[in-house]
Image (cartoon, rainbow, N blue to C red; front, top):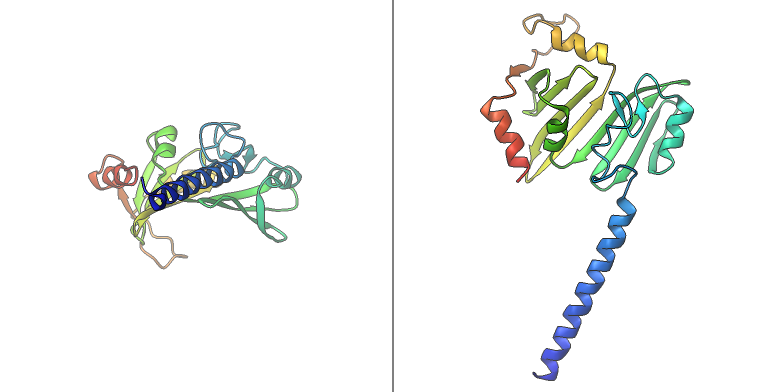
Length: 202
């Protein structure tokens, strides 16, 4: 083996080792308190609608701020907090002086695991931007669309009564306060819905 080839192999090995070390360090920084995932599926610590112990309509403002201390908070307003868990998961929450009122998670990835864990939704709709929305009476909406070559999911935790009203509403009834046409309702078994979920999991 020539000296030049030996040098190239040494450089390649060093680069691989450095890359692995950086990857391990980055992964360690991204870990959160939930097991076997990266934070987006942390719905098991409290009654829905909740995430990582933050329960809409129950968790106090003080408890909410204490939970956020482990994340990078990028915006702090009177009622809104924007935070980052890691590169693929961000959050927006709203609270009043006393209680958490809503929580939204923005996830770059496939929500198939979440939809599988939550079970068949109570309502499926196609949104005006071709996203598919999965509604659960427990107070969760999962909105998913494939953007270019990656999936983008928004997970909304809201008041269960508000979501139940939407689920039970006659889709032919138009809200006089809303100018747009109601979303198209789909079956969960619709081939387009299943194709979307299966394609994003590949």
